[in-house]
Length: 283
Image 1 (cartoon, helix red, strand yellow):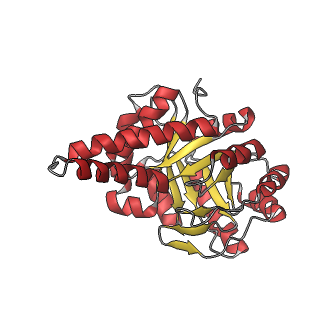
Image 2 (tube, rainbow, N blue to C red; image 1 turned 135 degrees about the vertical axis):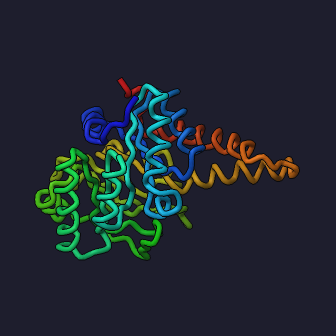
């Protein structure tokens, strides 16, 4: 089907007490793998690209690939700009056809974050596109943004932020990090419940790669409606190619590498969709 916005699918997730899986894709093969998983499980799905991925392939290229592949499946598909780092990039993504955008001003001071988020939200809403923002700092590194320490989201600030910006969903920091974890993370899951009490819009969990199934399920139960996965998809895709080359070093056809990469990503995505509880929700 044609691409849809994230507005309705996240609203349904919030009402149904499950989360939509949001998966970062780097190439055509990963797009195909994620959509195959979504179709097999009849799950709504969000595909995401970060600024570095966009720089590698352009907004127009990723839109064309996702839009073409989305027409082949029966489930709702949303194309989302993940960690948009400027008003200009968000505007370009909307113009290119993206159906959801994130503006990440979490590295700015509170008032500056509100200012840039509100500006993007006003533009996006005028075009019928929903906006995700972030408050608090998720640790680790995502593209060029890096945070050494986690600053968990303050519920009172979250309430004010949402009221003043008009955003449609909010990524909150609870101790997760981008990339793989060097040690088992200690998550402030109660913080999810506290923010949910004062914020009516869907909440988003970043840095889910490497989290246990139990941690993700509990975060969803407490109110997370969208869960982001990126690093583990990259690793699954690359590791499958490495394994093939180790077993068959004479392999030279890129399509062979693509096939094993797609299968690895598809199986991982299916597992994560089941953990999020979004399987069989595309009705």
